[in-house]
Image (cartoon, one colour):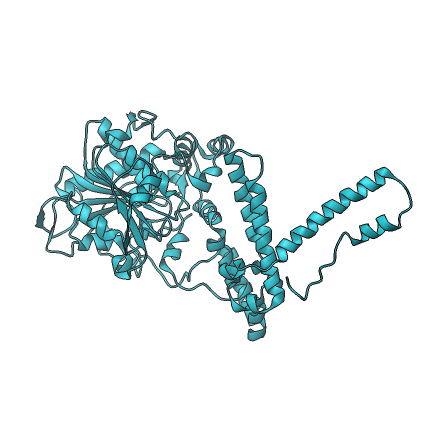
Length: 544
């Protein structure tokens, strides 16, 4: 306990009242005893809250020496963390069903995270020291950064001036060889004299922009695949405006994925191609391949799914926000036309990890006057995109709300019943263990829905950082092993491997890529001439 803080017994005055009172009032006596017991519980709470704990030093918000050396701030951080733990315990013990308990826990965490003493100038010793050291300049700079973010409508996580798409992001050489209302298709230039016979088509998420897979040369999955001798094609989704606000899920499947498959087949001169989908891009890709199967077609020689949900039984905290009332309200407002603004989705994703994606930037920028450093991944994270309302509403209802995609014939897409089990291509399914958007055990469930032979690999870290893990960095690790009855059994028997999962995927993909042939001398095709150099116009269009 902090020796500078008094610890009076809050029930002492009641003891004195009981001792001096001569009125034999049973009711008053019982009332006083009840108050005495209640206040004793309050006193016990604060005694527990002020008890020394190592949690503050382990929490990044309070890890600096300023929080540890000054007993006032040490007690403050310890009290806050004890309070947060007690609030979580109260939710855990509440007589609620699992879903209601999860919703309460999420809402409580938002409140408790916001209450952190690190988020207030008057209770943050690091921020106050910055004011003293700078003679108040940190406050002025913090105010400038705050106003700049207000003008942008979002909290800056990276130096916006450090990056530019086409200059130092999305720079892998290539050409746009097809475009329609919804997407552009990029064909990347080979860097090897020979390439595998079957091209690789990548379908990135339509939430945010494709260049998460092509950030910079040293962490580009696109560049890595090209260097392994693959002819790589990639869908660049349009950042839709009101003019595309009528488009639905079927449009993304037909005009987006299936159109890209067809063009890739024709330019690559191969009836079967390798396919890769990331996040919702994987959900769209699997849907498209199931539609193709219903039409008697089998265009995929292999299917790679990165942090993708096909079975939405457990969607983590993100799913707690989706209920019938919420979906009905969305359908009423934008289900027949309109836009879901990308900024709104970005705020939802940030709220899932507020202590990583919101409050550190508030504290460093606004309280300490420190502009965020350049970070390519977080620059991409802030480059949000809009979605058409009908497409978004279909996705919400059929997956998160009703979980119909996993059911054979559970959805009608592009005029045919969709059955994922009709996809007979071998599958490489990757998940990230700390993913807060796609829980890894839910991603594992995809292996039971697909007919072809499946391989599952689990990477360390989260939804994005786990995927973007180039081998040269020699960071993190992954697990691999034969499929088991369920995700927990798989992990118990899996082998931990140091380093990136990319080489494991590359080795697997080579087995489905066909023989080596001479690399194409020029991009495109007589029917699909080059439109413009990569990265193309669509990825450079900001959200309207």
